[in-house]
Image (cartoon, rainbow, N blue to C red):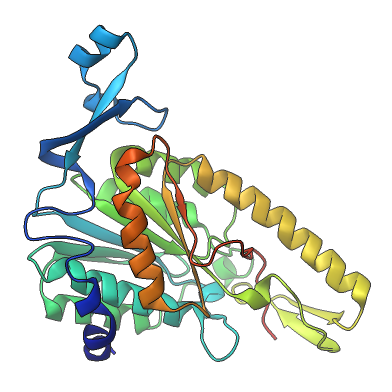
Length: 314
């Protein structure tokens, strides 16, 4: 897979996400890139007190990132990401995304690391460089997560906050952090994502499948929770049931968008039917405009398309 991506995606991206001595990421470098007004999610250590005193409004400094940078992938590999329509799962999409981006980053000597979460945080891959390291990361993504005692799993579900808390203590220096998840999780992850975004350059990569938002007319079906195993027998041919399903999905979608928008992280939406190269090139183009924005911006994979929050499997 990595060899195929190197020919179809990575070579076209190389030079867009980073150059020989500059990247699109801003943060812990030494060369000043810009000044802008202080926002609630900014690190107070970056306040330029001289400018603040002159204009009487707090301003923060932004820097060109050093060529030697670290990127971390926080990977949600819980049961819900193993869902997808048309034969493509969210896990497969996530694997291709991580493979392409990790290889682009490491081609110039930068390092990538990862934290892996299944039913708990079960793996930490230290930040290193090189093609073999990327292959190891992909292999770890495909390996089944270690099982936990059944009693602990029955009602547990995904707790994304555990992954974000682990990242706070595991990433020692300011880095670019990609949180790759469908964000189908128990509550409590939003404050942790906000704290992570105040210290690091965080991009929340939202995985979703169109089938999650719009339940098809499939007749009598048994839906099973991919993580807890709970089953529910429903009549999907009922227009009233499908309308209620869509209503609940929209409500949860609105709540998730609000949480992501207030976290301070940028958001890239990645659907199972998207073209990976098109998404990444659009992301690179929008990232160039990032310095001119005062607040984080969403980077939707496809404009004006709703994204899901509910998860079912037949």
